[in-house]
Length: 143
Image 1 (cartoon, rainbow, N blue to C red):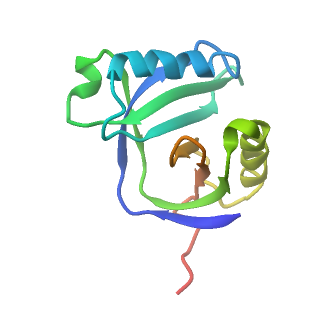
Image 2: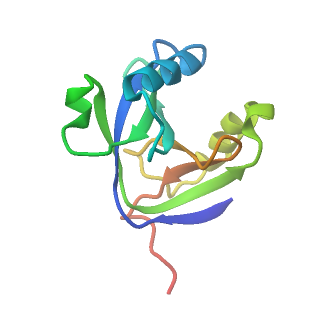
């Protein structure tokens, strides 16, 4: 596990999956249709537990301009800047289960933000960084 510092908030447009994990690919397909082009976009997966304990998953891409989510009839979401625990996964499509293993490992850390979420930051078509924000009250950056 590594520490990863996100300098700025990342504003996203999102399409919720109808179910998790089965609806994840379909959510990314719906997102691709709405955005029609990945030109200048990075992809993300956002997940967190719902009130009923079921996982809520959102396929996401960075916003290109303010108001884009509303224009495309998508949800908005912000990945907050700050310190994260992260695990890098290479060639994730051949190791899909490694994503859940990474989050299971990260979520063991008592310093994670209890109001945070699991963030999949897709770096390209093969690599993903799995991240969970650390609680800024509990986490004191080492000098």
